[in-house]
Length: 241
Image (cartoon, rainbow, N blue to C red; front, side):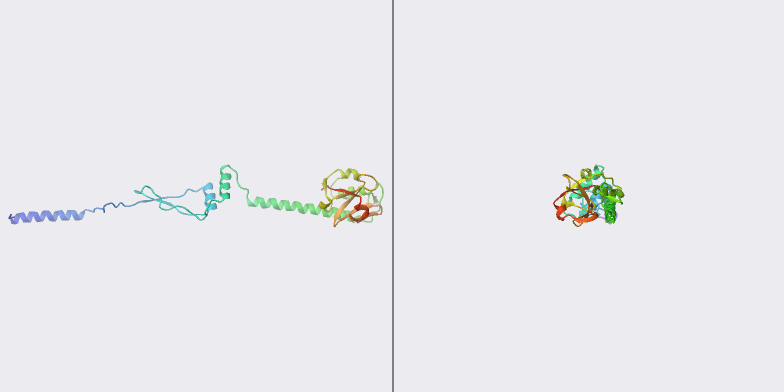
């Protein structure tokens, strides 16, 4: 079929216009959708911070891609292989409103307890020094002063100087305080003996090293618990302070 020259010109113009139109259009590649990412930050707060600290979480964000079933592409990474027991305990205490005791408070309690021990040792040392300072004072039956002491008058006098009140007689002193075995003796404890009468009829103050200070018939003196006379008559001990 023959086409006239005017027909050829019209056909060429039509094809050229079509090509120009096609080149101006941008067609996206099939099956390709621009992905948008959304960052979801892990919430913060007291409970989360405790878990984060205990598990040693590394800071990370969860990233989701739209158009792919919202599957997270990154997760928080924990350096711990398992959850320690103290994490659960801390979380339970926080949820129940129980706040763990600060380390500073625990330390202050320990310091206070140590100070109390030091005060107790100081009082005991003063008591022993007072007792030993009276060595040489003569024995006097019923005596309660530096002019002369009997055994219970001596212990009562020494303890009174340390702000501790004792009954008057050895028998009464034996019924107070805490019972102490011979192996538990400490300086300042009262030691009792059964001498001229049954029961606690003699008393002294233990000063350590297996010795005690007392008002003997020769005056205030230091004697060993292993002394034959007193070792055979030892009755027991009491701690008053």
